[in-house]
Image (tube, rainbow, N blue to C red; front, side, top):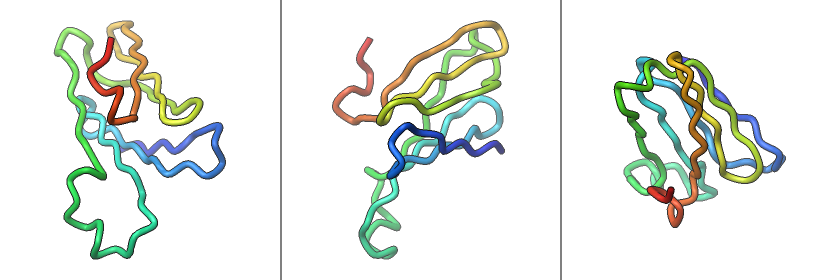
Length: 89
């Protein structure tokens, strides 16, 4: 598992990890007490990509809530961790 927490924003509250080379786990850290966010599904998500991309080999945060993901078959994907922008092309 590789954890990446790079951001231009020094107060970044997103964390990410590649799970099994196929899934990108994203989570938003909240200022709430631990038990208030522990079971909150809105604070994290798993992103799975099409098999044709291959394994995830690298990912990096940039700006505020955006990420570039690189794959072993040469694909590069830019994604947003903002809920209002998820699924946008």
